[in-house]
Image (cartoon, rainbow over all chains, first blue to last red; front, side, top):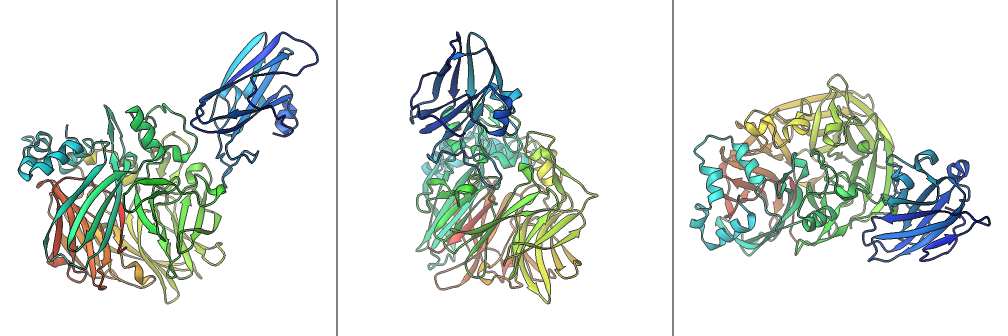
Length: 140
Length: 491
């Protein structure tokens, strides 16, 4: 997750120069007394998603120890497919830590709650945005 | 149903009241014949989720006044919450029993290991997760192996730290005085949640070795850990294994680490850990011999398919690596028999685990096998005499072939002679330990559970005269569940 914008405690993000009526609201659930920063990316390009290229948008959500959920809304999206992925950076090193087996040691998630067996593909994670679309991501 | 708390209160009130505890009477004096193991099973499902407060044990016989220290034991204990039952012996939450011994007196207390799993389930008043052998829909998020870590297999002192251990996840540090849980042990950031076996082995120089079996994570690999005398990480190494065999323990010799990749192979056919293992009788088991100096595999020696949980002593002699194991013909013990509703629990016989010696040539890859007729488990020895051929002390089965041993059996170094003390068919004999008094006198301690008389405790034996029976006992007038492994510390 590169080129993350520093937008703390953000609840709404407007980033498109063209104005559309579509929005995507993402609710992240499953925080268990895990203060830290959730790094969240929204992609609308499957190649960028697969190759780790910059996302369409990204946010950093500051999470306190009492929080169990977080919500963010992206406004003015063009209609189409979007994939969301995130990890929760508990130790502040801005990386998703993993152990020697490559198994994440920090929480993560994908839209559609995909990625039960390794990272989710764009197709598995994609959400079709039309009008006011909502999706929930449960932390893994 | 018997609860541990009510039972404890009853036991403290008077010994006579013990015999009147209704549930206990049901266990012991039922008018319907029931197998011994069925009675144990009923006891297993009667355990409370509460800790056990300190109580003083009654010492009898010639209890040594200069025996000072603490005996710790760990075992799967909590198998029932509400109406939910765990199906497999692997799935009980770990409980640490601590016996403090000083001035001829012995006190006992026990606490559950407060893993994340235990704490969440205790708060929810229900089991939330599937087990190693128990099917259940996960009602809470499973993020890593430690989410379902029961820390139920062993407790060992590494340096000045006490680790309660499972095998598929982290060790959990325990306060040796209070038995309270201090937290998960992460040896290095990149080793978080990694498998750490319940059987670390101390080297002759006081350092420690352990391994983790990565088979269940989809890779035929093992991780070797090298810890210093204080239990801090010195180095680790991932090594490739021939395939994904079950490995529970291992051995260390002067030059080598010896892993046994059993013919009980991991498949990916189930969501349950135990169900994923399949014994492949036509395939070989392999001793994988790793050089301690550079942690590379020196030799892989194939042997006919077998299954092993535990190792006895190991050493090098006349150019051979000598490894002692309690060997099963196959893995029925884990895959079938340890299910609490198995036929075995109804009284059928289990397969024997014969004490067996392998002599391995690292140069030629040849091996020799010497198998005794002693059906024993939990082999222990004098760990202060690493790498020496020596007597092994075990929990054995002489006549009753259910899951539980009923004898202390000592077997000499070449497996040619043995002594035993038979507790009889009403008693479970647990893992023995070779311990020392303050003056250096050696003793063998063995915890036991006597269902007929509704008591448990510690017996002490002269190491050279096992057959003479215990020289002293510390009697706990309450039943506790049979456990797995422990340690003794003179500190």
